[in-house]
Length: 384
Image 1 (cartoon, helix red, strand yellow):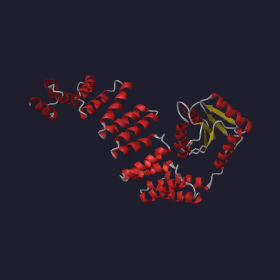
Image 2 (tube, rainbow, N blue to C red):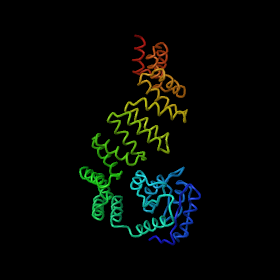
Image 3 (cartoon, rainbow, N blue to C red):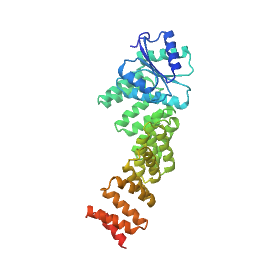
Image 4 (cartoon, rainbow, N blue to C red):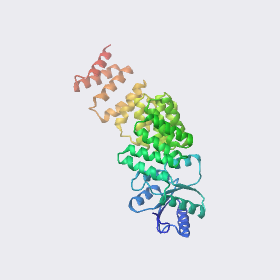
């Protein structure tokens, strides 16, 4: 049980005056014996891993690590995931409301808030934490049963959660997810569809329908539901990537590029994501976009000679042989013993009509690897 007077509260906001204002309000309200402060999500995370916190009040928009990124870490941590979190936001937009539901925010308060509005939120959140409604109790038991490996028992608990809160889409969606994990696709689909009918902002249900239809290779329906999820809550990187992949499968390359650009814009690890997407594009022969992404990486990491080689291959595939040769030559200077690079240099020299140079390069390849069939074939082309 959390004691209003003795609880530890963590206040997270990048604006010092806001931290002080909230702290002063809590002191007047008499809520919390110990107040801790952090000016961004990363600093807050370090505190949460060291100190016991009963309640966190977190600003939505912060540098270094946002409130949503911090909340995502909290909900994925077994020791912290059930801690009450109140999100402070400048506005209650449709997107924020959707993300609140998606991330299991216990409540949110809109700035500028009064002492009464903050106090009311805390009162409501702590009372629910101390006396959770039956739906929440059953869903937590379902989670525990699933983690223990008893998914059938988890399904039964989820069914009880549905009965306990028949007007809420959350237990219906969670039941659907458990059935999905059991490979009961028909019943899972039925639950997800029911959830979105009950709540048109249930972004997770839309997302799971996208996953379900992707798994069944129903690309048309997968695209529809991923798009609906994105329209409700676009700030979700893995959803962007999943949706982009579906668009690629549909041949909607222009639209897929827009979605991938959105994912990159949202990512804290831009270079890694750019490389992942470039590999996906290479596999699907979207060479122009792959080249663009790898070029961007090279600007930050000019010694990535492996990327030079890949860009060279992509340019070769698109018939840009001069560009291909430039990148392949750059990669070859770093890795002079790489036979594959030399073979591709020879191939592009032939395409450019520089047969004598190509023959010289390919003969060097055969000195190193006399059995290289591709080099032999290319030398044959030089002789024609």
